[in-house]
Amino acid sequence: MDQNADYKEESKLLNNGFNLVAGVDEVGRGTVAGPLVVGIATLPNNPSGDWLTLIKDSKLLSSKKRVTALEILYDKKCLMATGSSSPNEIDEFGIVKATSIATNRAIENLGKTPDVLLVDGFTLPGILIKQKPIIKGDRKCLSIAAASIIAKVTRDEFMNQQHKLYPVYSFDSNKGYLTKKHSEAIEKHGPSPIHRYSFEPITSMTVPKLFD
Image (cartoon, rainbow, N blue to C red; front, side, top):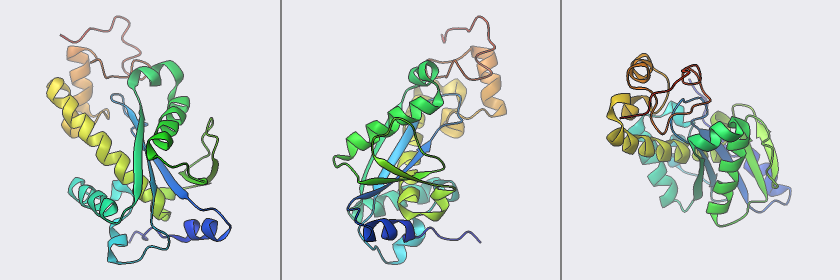
């Protein structure tokens, strides 16, 4: 059974004099299409209640439960925002810098500057705010789990909209990840404007077809 995320890291930082602690997580790093989206979230100090059991790594929740969890987070007055990097930016700068760009945009969109960021995985370059990286943080830390939820819901909604523009790629179901059906669509139709041309198999297409 998966252990629920908790508030221990946030409490530790708050007790050490930090006033605003935010969790950060990204979605879409390994896709071949669509943006990379970073979520940032702060929870009320010392939160409690049964609702916390639903705040977990977005990958552990169904799409319906993610939406429900996000509604609860807003209802509990959690401060949240997202920032993104476009496929063109990912192609131009690489995925690491693009993640930092999206993170800075999320921080700006939050409206308040956190004193410290709890980051899933590893420290991000190009971020001026103090960071504390936590391996598998989206499964351990409530703020990071909340950030993963808002990032996932936001990106999924975007990819659902892109499906209406480019239905042959089935973005509504694969969300830009390279499934067999998605790969076959790229081979048949060429890449769309929202595909990442620096990612395989698109890079190996010497003369990429333009979407028609």
